[in-house]
Picture 1: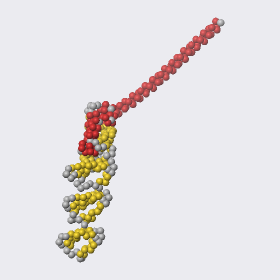
Picture 2 (picture 1 turned 180 degrees about the horizontal axis):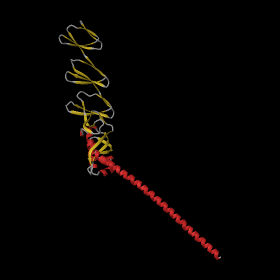
Picture 3 (picture 1 turned 120 degrees about the horizontal axis):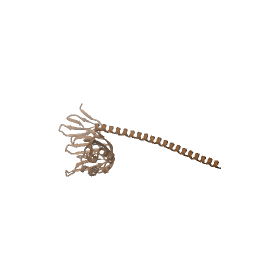
Picture 4 (picture 1 turned 180 degrees about the vertical axis):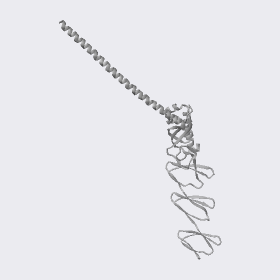
Length: 324
Protein backbone atom coordinates (compact mmCIF):
# COMPACT_ATOMS: atom_id res chain seq x y z
CA UNK A 1 0.00 0.00 0.00
CA UNK A 2 2.73 2.46 0.90
CA UNK A 3 5.20 1.68 -1.87
CA UNK A 4 5.05 1.78 -5.68
CA UNK A 5 7.13 -0.82 -7.50
CA UNK A 6 8.69 0.04 -10.87
CA UNK A 7 9.53 -3.10 -12.80
CA UNK A 8 12.73 -3.62 -14.72
CA UNK A 9 12.42 -2.18 -18.22
CA UNK A 10 9.86 0.43 -17.17
CA UNK A 11 10.17 4.19 -16.80
CA UNK A 12 7.86 6.16 -14.55
CA UNK A 13 7.42 9.91 -14.15
CA UNK A 14 6.94 10.69 -10.43
CA UNK A 15 5.28 14.02 -9.51
CA UNK A 16 5.37 15.26 -5.91
CA UNK A 17 2.81 17.50 -4.21
CA UNK A 18 4.71 20.62 -5.29
CA UNK A 19 4.56 19.63 -8.99
CA UNK A 20 8.17 18.65 -9.37
CA UNK A 21 8.72 15.71 -11.69
CA UNK A 22 11.33 12.99 -11.43
CA UNK A 23 11.99 10.30 -14.03
CA UNK A 24 12.72 6.93 -12.43
CA UNK A 25 13.84 3.82 -14.30
CA UNK A 26 13.13 0.37 -12.86
CA UNK A 27 13.71 -1.80 -11.06
CA UNK A 28 12.84 0.55 -8.20
CA UNK A 29 10.61 0.74 -5.10
CA UNK A 30 9.29 4.24 -4.25
CA UNK A 31 7.31 5.52 -1.26
CA UNK A 32 3.81 6.52 -2.42
CA UNK A 33 2.93 9.27 0.03
CA UNK A 34 2.20 12.60 -1.70
CA UNK A 35 3.26 11.41 -5.14
CA UNK A 36 1.58 10.66 -8.49
CA UNK A 37 2.98 8.04 -10.85
CA UNK A 38 2.73 8.02 -14.66
CA UNK A 39 4.14 5.11 -16.68
CA UNK A 40 5.88 6.37 -19.84
CA UNK A 41 4.92 4.85 -23.16
CA UNK A 42 7.66 2.88 -24.88
CA UNK A 43 7.83 3.23 -28.69
CA UNK A 44 10.06 1.01 -30.85
CA UNK A 45 10.93 1.27 -34.55
CA UNK A 46 12.42 -1.79 -36.22
CA UNK A 47 14.47 -1.79 -39.45
CA UNK A 48 12.27 -0.52 -42.25
CA UNK A 49 10.33 1.73 -39.84
CA UNK A 50 10.86 5.13 -38.25
CA UNK A 51 9.57 7.09 -35.27
CA UNK A 52 7.89 10.48 -35.65
CA UNK A 53 8.66 12.41 -32.46
CA UNK A 54 6.66 15.61 -31.95
CA UNK A 55 7.85 18.02 -29.26
CA UNK A 56 5.84 20.43 -27.16
CA UNK A 57 7.70 23.40 -28.68
CA UNK A 58 6.35 22.50 -32.17
CA UNK A 59 9.49 20.88 -33.50
CA UNK A 60 9.57 17.37 -34.93
CA UNK A 61 12.21 14.71 -35.54
CA UNK A 62 12.22 11.44 -37.48
CA UNK A 63 14.33 8.57 -36.15
CA UNK A 64 14.85 5.60 -38.54
CA UNK A 65 14.89 2.15 -36.95
CA UNK A 66 16.19 0.35 -35.12
CA UNK A 67 15.31 3.00 -32.54
CA UNK A 68 13.44 3.33 -29.23
CA UNK A 69 11.90 6.36 -27.60
CA UNK A 70 10.08 6.99 -24.30
CA UNK A 71 7.15 9.41 -24.42
CA UNK A 72 8.00 12.04 -21.79
CA UNK A 73 4.99 14.39 -21.44
CA UNK A 74 7.30 17.13 -20.21
CA UNK A 75 8.98 17.42 -23.65
CA UNK A 76 6.93 15.30 -26.05
CA UNK A 77 3.41 15.82 -27.32
CA UNK A 78 3.18 12.67 -29.43
CA UNK A 79 5.24 9.76 -30.77
CA UNK A 80 4.11 7.72 -33.77
CA UNK A 81 5.56 4.86 -35.77
CA UNK A 82 5.47 4.72 -39.57
CA UNK A 83 6.87 2.48 -42.30
CA UNK A 84 9.78 3.71 -44.41
CA UNK A 85 8.99 3.86 -48.11
CA UNK A 86 10.62 1.03 -50.06
CA UNK A 87 11.76 2.29 -53.47
CA UNK A 88 12.86 -0.51 -55.80
CA UNK A 89 15.30 -0.22 -58.66
CA UNK A 90 13.92 1.69 -61.67
CA UNK A 91 11.50 3.49 -59.36
CA UNK A 92 11.51 7.07 -58.11
CA UNK A 93 9.56 9.41 -55.86
CA UNK A 94 9.23 13.18 -55.96
CA UNK A 95 9.82 14.88 -52.58
CA UNK A 96 8.87 18.45 -51.69
CA UNK A 97 10.24 20.50 -48.80
CA UNK A 98 10.75 24.11 -47.72
CA UNK A 99 14.23 25.48 -47.38
CA UNK A 100 15.46 27.82 -44.66
CA UNK A 101 14.11 30.82 -46.56
CA UNK A 102 10.64 29.30 -46.80
CA UNK A 103 10.84 28.57 -50.51
CA UNK A 104 9.43 25.33 -51.85
CA UNK A 105 12.04 22.95 -53.22
CA UNK A 106 11.71 19.68 -55.13
CA UNK A 107 14.02 16.70 -55.37
CA UNK A 108 13.81 13.29 -56.98
CA UNK A 109 14.80 10.21 -54.98
CA UNK A 110 15.82 7.27 -57.16
CA UNK A 111 15.71 3.64 -56.08
CA UNK A 112 16.80 1.28 -54.76
CA UNK A 113 16.30 3.16 -51.50
CA UNK A 114 14.63 2.85 -48.10
CA UNK A 115 13.28 6.40 -47.87
CA UNK A 116 12.60 8.14 -44.56
CA UNK A 117 11.25 11.68 -45.07
CA UNK A 118 12.65 14.52 -43.03
CA UNK A 119 10.24 16.63 -40.95
CA UNK A 120 8.21 18.91 -43.22
CA UNK A 121 8.80 16.84 -46.36
CA UNK A 122 5.98 15.24 -48.33
CA UNK A 123 5.65 13.06 -51.40
CA UNK A 124 4.05 14.06 -54.67
CA UNK A 125 0.85 12.11 -55.29
CA UNK A 126 0.20 11.54 -58.99
CA UNK A 127 -3.34 11.35 -60.36
CA UNK A 128 -3.34 10.17 -63.96
CA UNK A 129 -5.70 8.62 -66.49
CA UNK A 130 -6.17 4.93 -65.80
CA UNK A 131 -8.45 2.04 -66.62
CA UNK A 132 -10.81 0.14 -64.42
CA UNK A 133 -10.20 -3.54 -63.81
CA UNK A 134 -11.07 -5.59 -66.89
CA UNK A 135 -11.64 -2.50 -69.05
CA UNK A 136 -9.27 -0.82 -71.54
CA UNK A 137 -11.10 2.51 -71.42
CA UNK A 138 -9.04 5.21 -69.67
CA UNK A 139 -10.81 7.59 -67.29
CA UNK A 140 -9.44 10.69 -65.47
CA UNK A 141 -8.18 9.91 -62.00
CA UNK A 142 -8.17 6.17 -62.59
CA UNK A 143 -4.52 5.86 -61.52
CA UNK A 144 -3.35 7.29 -58.16
CA UNK A 145 0.18 6.55 -56.91
CA UNK A 146 3.39 8.02 -55.47
CA UNK A 147 6.15 5.88 -56.99
CA UNK A 148 7.11 6.47 -60.61
CA UNK A 149 7.92 3.46 -62.81
CA UNK A 150 11.04 4.11 -64.91
CA UNK A 151 11.15 0.84 -66.87
CA UNK A 152 9.57 0.36 -70.32
CA UNK A 153 5.84 -0.14 -69.97
CA UNK A 154 2.80 -0.64 -72.17
CA UNK A 155 -0.91 0.06 -72.12
CA UNK A 156 -4.02 -0.76 -74.12
CA UNK A 157 -6.00 2.09 -75.63
CA UNK A 158 -9.20 2.11 -77.70
CA UNK A 159 -9.92 5.15 -79.88
CA UNK A 160 -13.69 5.42 -80.18
CA UNK A 161 -15.92 7.16 -82.72
CA UNK A 162 -13.38 7.28 -85.55
CA UNK A 163 -15.27 8.23 -88.72
CA UNK A 164 -13.98 7.27 -92.17
CA UNK A 165 -14.45 9.28 -95.36
CA UNK A 166 -17.66 7.36 -96.18
CA UNK A 167 -19.09 7.93 -92.64
CA UNK A 168 -18.37 4.50 -91.18
CA UNK A 169 -17.82 4.79 -87.41
CA UNK A 170 -15.03 2.58 -86.02
CA UNK A 171 -13.36 1.87 -82.70
CA UNK A 172 -9.62 1.37 -83.20
CA UNK A 173 -7.65 -0.80 -80.77
CA UNK A 174 -3.99 -0.11 -79.94
CA UNK A 175 -1.19 -1.22 -77.64
CA UNK A 176 1.30 1.58 -76.87
CA UNK A 177 4.83 0.82 -75.64
CA UNK A 178 6.48 3.76 -73.83
CA UNK A 179 9.13 4.67 -71.25
CA UNK A 180 9.64 7.60 -68.88
CA UNK A 181 13.18 8.89 -69.50
CA UNK A 182 13.18 12.39 -67.96
CA UNK A 183 11.28 12.86 -64.69
CA UNK A 184 12.07 16.57 -64.34
CA UNK A 185 10.78 17.35 -67.83
CA UNK A 186 7.62 15.38 -67.12
CA UNK A 187 6.97 17.28 -63.88
CA UNK A 188 7.49 20.65 -65.58
CA UNK A 189 5.45 19.93 -68.72
CA UNK A 190 2.52 17.72 -67.71
CA UNK A 191 0.24 16.84 -64.80
CA UNK A 192 -1.15 13.75 -66.58
CA UNK A 193 1.26 12.15 -69.12
CA UNK A 194 -0.98 9.16 -69.76
CA UNK A 195 -3.82 11.52 -70.67
CA UNK A 196 -1.49 13.42 -73.01
CA UNK A 197 -0.35 10.18 -74.69
CA UNK A 198 -3.85 8.80 -75.29
CA UNK A 199 -5.16 12.17 -76.50
CA UNK A 200 -2.29 12.58 -78.97
CA UNK A 201 -2.72 8.99 -80.17
CA UNK A 202 -6.44 9.53 -80.68
CA UNK A 203 -5.82 12.75 -82.61
CA UNK A 204 -3.31 11.12 -84.96
CA UNK A 205 -5.48 8.03 -85.52
CA UNK A 206 -8.60 10.09 -86.28
CA UNK A 207 -6.68 12.32 -88.68
CA UNK A 208 -5.17 9.31 -90.49
CA UNK A 209 -8.38 7.27 -90.86
CA UNK A 210 -10.57 10.24 -91.87
CA UNK A 211 -8.72 10.49 -95.20
CA UNK A 212 -9.84 7.07 -96.50
CA UNK A 213 -13.03 5.15 -97.08
CA UNK A 214 -13.62 2.07 -94.97
CA UNK A 215 -12.40 -0.27 -97.72
CA UNK A 216 -9.27 1.81 -98.35
CA UNK A 217 -8.62 1.96 -94.62
CA UNK A 218 -8.73 -1.83 -94.34
CA UNK A 219 -6.38 -2.19 -97.31
CA UNK A 220 -3.81 0.20 -95.78
CA UNK A 221 -4.34 -0.52 -92.07
CA UNK A 222 -0.67 -1.55 -91.78
CA UNK A 223 0.15 2.19 -91.63
CA UNK A 224 -1.27 2.23 -88.10
CA UNK A 225 1.70 0.11 -86.94
CA UNK A 226 4.24 2.71 -88.11
CA UNK A 227 5.50 5.34 -85.66
CA UNK A 228 5.81 7.92 -88.44
CA UNK A 229 2.02 7.92 -88.67
CA UNK A 230 1.81 9.55 -85.21
CA UNK A 231 3.62 12.93 -85.40
CA UNK A 232 1.56 14.59 -82.66
CA UNK A 233 2.16 11.68 -80.28
CA UNK A 234 5.93 11.66 -80.85
CA UNK A 235 6.15 15.43 -80.44
CA UNK A 236 4.10 15.48 -77.23
CA UNK A 237 5.97 12.51 -75.77
CA UNK A 238 9.31 14.27 -76.35
CA UNK A 239 7.95 17.41 -74.62
CA UNK A 240 6.91 15.52 -71.47
CA UNK A 241 10.05 13.36 -71.13
CA UNK A 242 8.69 10.12 -72.57
CA UNK A 243 9.95 7.87 -75.36
CA UNK A 244 7.48 5.93 -77.51
CA UNK A 245 9.06 2.62 -78.52
CA UNK A 246 6.30 1.33 -80.80
CA UNK A 247 2.56 1.16 -81.40
CA UNK A 248 0.76 -2.08 -82.22
CA UNK A 249 -2.56 -1.84 -84.06
CA UNK A 250 -4.75 -4.66 -82.75
CA UNK A 251 -7.77 -4.25 -85.01
CA UNK A 252 -11.09 -2.46 -84.98
CA UNK A 253 -14.75 -2.89 -84.02
CA UNK A 254 -17.92 -1.33 -85.42
CA UNK A 255 -21.59 -1.00 -84.52
CA UNK A 256 -23.48 -4.29 -84.32
CA UNK A 257 -25.66 -3.50 -87.35
CA UNK A 258 -22.67 -2.55 -89.49
CA UNK A 259 -20.74 -5.53 -88.19
CA UNK A 260 -23.58 -7.85 -89.24
CA UNK A 261 -23.65 -6.26 -92.71
CA UNK A 262 -19.87 -6.65 -93.04
CA UNK A 263 -20.08 -10.29 -91.96
CA UNK A 264 -22.82 -10.91 -94.54
CA UNK A 265 -20.73 -9.17 -97.20
CA UNK A 266 -17.68 -11.25 -96.28
CA UNK A 267 -19.79 -14.41 -96.37
CA UNK A 268 -21.20 -13.48 -99.79
CA UNK A 269 -17.74 -12.67 -101.19
CA UNK A 270 -16.36 -15.93 -99.84
CA UNK A 271 -19.24 -17.91 -101.34
CA UNK A 272 -18.83 -16.22 -104.74
CA UNK A 273 -15.09 -16.82 -104.63
CA UNK A 274 -15.61 -20.51 -103.89
CA UNK A 275 -18.21 -20.78 -106.65
CA UNK A 276 -15.85 -19.04 -109.07
CA UNK A 277 -13.01 -21.38 -108.18
CA UNK A 278 -15.32 -24.37 -108.55
CA UNK A 279 -16.53 -23.16 -111.97
CA UNK A 280 -12.96 -22.49 -113.08
CA UNK A 281 -12.00 -26.02 -112.12
CA UNK A 282 -15.00 -27.39 -114.01
CA UNK A 283 -14.10 -25.39 -117.11
CA UNK A 284 -10.48 -26.52 -116.92
CA UNK A 285 -11.67 -30.12 -116.64
CA UNK A 286 -13.97 -29.68 -119.66
CA UNK A 287 -11.14 -28.09 -121.65
CA UNK A 288 -8.85 -30.94 -120.66
CA UNK A 289 -11.39 -33.51 -121.82
CA UNK A 290 -11.95 -31.65 -125.10
CA UNK A 291 -8.23 -31.34 -125.74
CA UNK A 292 -7.76 -35.04 -125.08
CA UNK A 293 -10.61 -35.88 -127.48
CA UNK A 294 -9.14 -33.62 -130.16
CA UNK A 295 -5.75 -35.25 -129.70
CA UNK A 296 -7.32 -38.71 -130.09
CA UNK A 297 -9.18 -37.62 -133.25
CA UNK A 298 -6.01 -36.07 -134.63
CA UNK A 299 -4.00 -39.23 -133.95
CA UNK A 300 -6.71 -41.39 -135.52
CA UNK A 301 -6.75 -39.23 -138.67
CA UNK A 302 -2.96 -39.38 -138.91
CA UNK A 303 -3.11 -43.17 -138.64
CA UNK A 304 -5.77 -43.30 -141.34
CA UNK A 305 -3.65 -41.10 -143.61
CA UNK A 306 -0.62 -43.31 -143.04
CA UNK A 307 -2.72 -46.35 -143.80
CA UNK A 308 -3.92 -44.79 -147.07
CA UNK A 309 -0.34 -43.89 -148.06
CA UNK A 310 0.72 -47.44 -147.26
CA UNK A 311 -2.10 -48.89 -149.37
CA UNK A 312 -1.17 -46.60 -152.28
CA UNK A 313 2.44 -47.70 -152.06
CA UNK A 314 1.42 -51.36 -152.07
CA UNK A 315 -0.80 -50.74 -155.07
CA UNK A 316 2.06 -49.09 -156.95
CA UNK A 317 4.42 -51.98 -156.21
CA UNK A 318 1.85 -54.55 -157.38
CA UNK A 319 1.23 -52.59 -160.57
CA UNK A 320 4.97 -52.46 -161.32
CA UNK A 321 5.25 -56.21 -160.78
CA UNK A 322 2.43 -56.86 -163.25
CA UNK A 323 4.12 -54.70 -165.89
CA UNK A 324 7.34 -56.62 -165.54
